[in-house]
Amino acid sequence: MLVRVIGAGVAGLTAAFEIARQGAAAGVSVELVEREARAGRGCSRYAGGMIAPWCELQSSEPIVAELGEEALEFWTRDVPVARVAGSLVVAPERERAELVDFSRRTRNFEALDGAGLARLEPDLAGRFSNALYFPREAHLDPRAAMDALTTLLAAMPNVALRFGEEAGGPADWTIDCRGFAARDALKELRGVKGEMLVLRSEEIALSRPVRMLHPRRPVYVVPRGDGLFMVGATMIENEERSRVTARSIVELVNSAYAIHPAFAEAEIVEMGSDVRPAYPDNLPRLTKRGRTLYINGLYRHGFLLAPALARRAARVILDDEFFPEVMDADQRERTDA
Ligand SMILES: Cc1cc2nc3c(=O)[nH]c(=O)nc-3n(C[C@H](O)[C@H](O)[C@H](O)COP(=O)(O)OP(=O)(O)OC[C@H]3O[C@@H](n4cnc5c(N)ncnc54)[C@H](O)[C@@H]3O)c2cc1C
Image 1: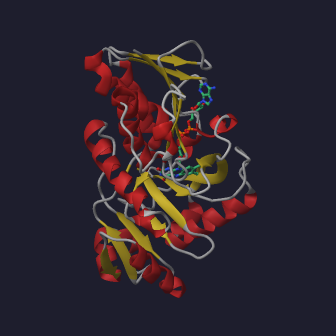
Image 2: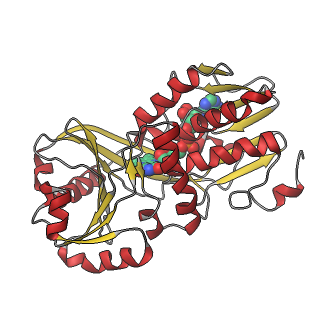
């Protein structure tokens, strides 16, 4: 059986990996087709890489945390690129109510006072009097994660990688992972623009992602090593992919500065922007139409949700399973339509 996966973002790479390994014994071959010259040149390139299922409960449905827990295992065991150092949530003193609200909506955290925060992150000593610490959460560098997956796929005997090609040709199954480009077929998809910065500062040391709450300008900083920090991300209901605005940069830098003033002197290494593919309910879906399965709607949870969706996608096409948590009820009836 030949399975063609279209699109080598995080959805396509994880799907190709799961289908190839779950289908190897049954003689399944996987062809991964990407129109760019290499993997990870779409939206996945700009992700923060926070694998934070419990923090995401603040603004997401419980299913996001349930599926997201599978990512912790995937990115530490199957493709071991994540670091489990936990994550921190802080708020400026005048926004203390935001922290209380965050604690009510989330779980699996420890409440810290200023001294506890300073023990974990000495560079934040004296800056915040309260924090929430989620010790089991992880973070990864999305580009390194996609490179690692590409290397693993290249070494699998039943996988062919085709870069610089648009999709085409017959296959027994097509797995459509084109992200926002799939809107030609998935009319409900919308784009939620996100802008990010990469800053370099030798003066700041952080071991884990830090989220700072704010009613209008929440921000997070993810350490990438070698003095690099990803600062993200705007959330704008707008489908313009690549223009980074001065206003967004000012807001991101201001917020980073509120986490640590040394960010004011940091070098701007990169500015980037793309649109997150999202369904109206901001939840991901597997959509089966005949012999095509679409994996889409990863919204702000690409690295968090792709492993769980990929595992389920493999079982849908290999074993004809049905997963109500990510599939519409009518797909049960419309098999091979
Ligand atoms: C600023 C920002 C911050 C984010 N932060 C996080 C975060 O911290 N954690 C997290 O989990 N998620 C985060 N996200 C969301 C995450 O990036 C997305 O959910 C995810 O990248 C979507 O992945 P995808 O594989 O569906 O799409 P994409 O990464 O866009 O991949 C689609 C691929 O398909 C290819 N393609 C399109 N059409 C064709 C065709 N016809 N033929 C062949 N190839 C084709 C494209 O070139 C692309 O490589 C963030 C997003 C942004 C923008």
